[in-house]
Amino acid sequence: MFFWDSTMVLLIPAILLSLYAQFKISSSYKKYAKIRSRSGLTGAQAARTILNNHGLYDVKVEPIGGSLSDHYDPRTRVIRLSQDVYQGSSLSSIAVAAHETGHALQHAAGYAPMQLRSAFVPVANIGSSAGPLLIILGLFIPAFDWLLQLGIFAFTFAVLFQVITLPVEYNASGRALSLLQEGQMLGSDEVRGARSVLNAAALTYVAAALAAVLQLARFMLIASGRSDD
Image (cartoon, rainbow, N blue to C red; front, side, top):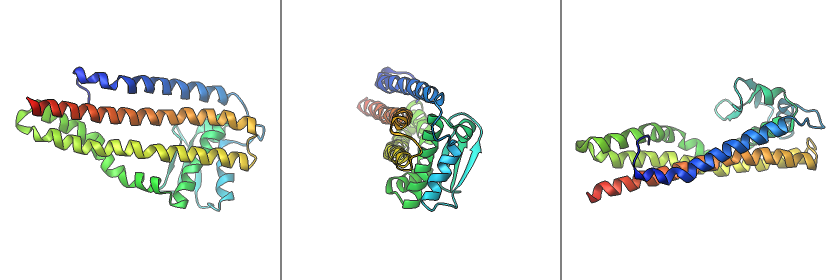
């Protein structure tokens, strides 16, 4: 993954998209972090309201350190929000909090792509860490050439995880926007701002998935070249 050869050019589209996605999420989040919602709800209050409206009283909402470290933990059924989101009443704060709450609703409803993604976590972690290492060993130690194929096989699970993540994230954002509007926590004009934040965040997942797919294609191209030698 970290060595240079001519196949690196395959990664250029993913690198460019990743840079653009980071710029979009940063600029969109900062822009709407300056706009306070008319409801005055904080991110924590918005999340709690949505959860209570759907009978998910046992799902906790807790603050966590860091910036944009927000996530839902399905193992402990806890929504963890960064301090700015937890305490903030901006459009950005409410949008992010509602998105994470969307994951809690997915979990409660047994949303199939989320269940599939959760099942992939162990093998994806192995594939993302061990796959590139096996590939490098297979490339630079001729006696262990078979490790190249094994590494590509392992890395494939990490790629599948990134691809499966896309519908999970987009669905959570769609749920969030609908719930915010239906619950009258945001007005129609405010929802447009929230959508801008969530669309920018979703783009980062698209960039990650594209990078993973192109990296896999690169590995397969390298393996093909080795077999032709």
